[in-house]
Image (cartoon, rainbow, N blue to C red; front, top):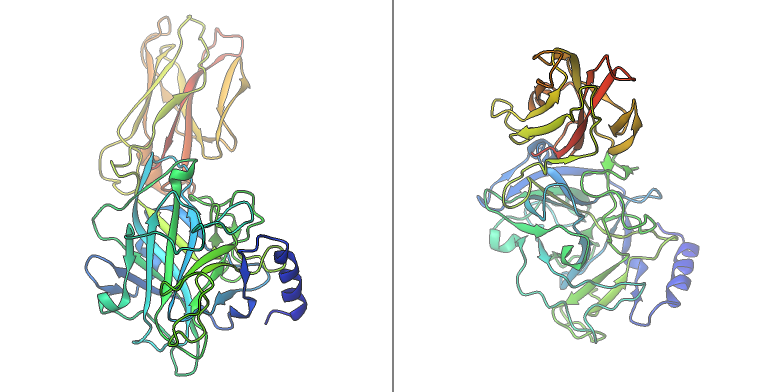
Length: 449
């Protein structure tokens, strides 16, 4: 349980904030049972697969993840049946393009409703509106509920006729992570670095229970900008021991709409334990550092189809014959179709009849001075097989070509996964150069699912 001194400290911190902010720490409950993966519900077919979520989405990219529980312990929110709880986040600008095709969502909750009766809904809205900012709870103006009429995607337990996993015994509490897949349709969300990339999502548990039930709390708002999203884990979750992320711009607040009760009004008589409509804080950092609800979103590229964003960059070294090596590519880098088309990297205009190779890295792009040219890859550098350039040593008619998809699909490099940014460059022998070597420019790409 949270110590009273921690609660008092959190309240003292928050009382200095805007008057619209409200705190109810009594609803924060410790998780005292194992959190289990329940499986995946297919929103298109209405069928539930109890296989682990991670196994079903192995080739998908993380778009958004707020799934790090606090180092001080794992907690969830006790919510009443009449409440719609809204949380927010941002979709970071990634390498797949201007938008993302969402394919998978994941929520986490604890409930005392027994399996077969757990009635939980959720919905995701693509919106430029934010719940609050600058330390003040400003969403909704004078206290009106969020103006969302229809979400991009969501799950209604009653409408689907499918209660989610619940408590395994009467009087107990069970905690679950549940995945949802989107079938074959497109669900697109913007990716950028401004307000167009904001989203809000809603959680509602419809069981009116004496024992608290509600979403699991995750994230720490102390992380600048909410580091750790878009396939860049922020660390290892202290409770589950797996890589996790702190949601980008997921603030330490949520908006509660209690069956359209006006802000500050009295909830209906049947809404036992419900809070009035308004903005609430989870406890306040650093005393009770929770940034929002557990939520993960995954996708398979942009809505027009993943291209890999193949981009030439950096500066080639002029070789001893006065020629500048050129790089090009064909195909799409991907992990899903190993028997399909190649993703060929080609460097031309090399000194003929000389050995060399392609090398690459996954730790970022570079452009520092090296051997009279530029090293365009940040270490650690990984080398591909040595090749002969062909042609004649007195002419710039040498080339190297490599199918990088073969490297991806070989499994020899665990870093070559969907969403990884790769930089590749060619090196060749050039005996008449002062360094006896030559370097091409480079090419960058993001691996598609």
